[in-house]
Image (cartoon, rainbow, N blue to C red):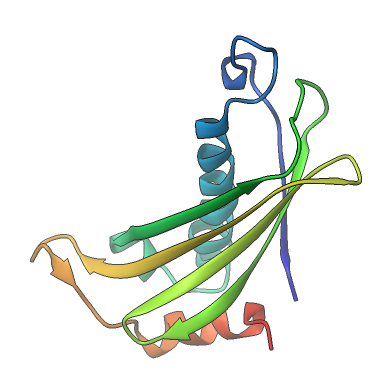
Length: 133
């Protein structure tokens, strides 16, 4: 199962060549991830992700340029789920064309104590339906 997010492009996303800047892809992926983990999780009664999640790694493959235009579609799912970290995978589509793939390793984090924490059972239960098999 994949979470799907439609993200409008902004004029500020463009680089000097008129394409979406490579660094802005991470912002687009972040918007999709936030929609899933904050908005979607909150609707499911899980608010603890909002208390702290940090990125420990990003990996991005750029497959084709994306021009300014219609919103892009981002599909994401969970590739790996451990009590101390999880990996989110993404595919970004420009129309029907796959434009980029990415992965982010995320770590639950206690912002007050400034240290990693374990995921709660509620957090793991929320993410499990998105886990690829």
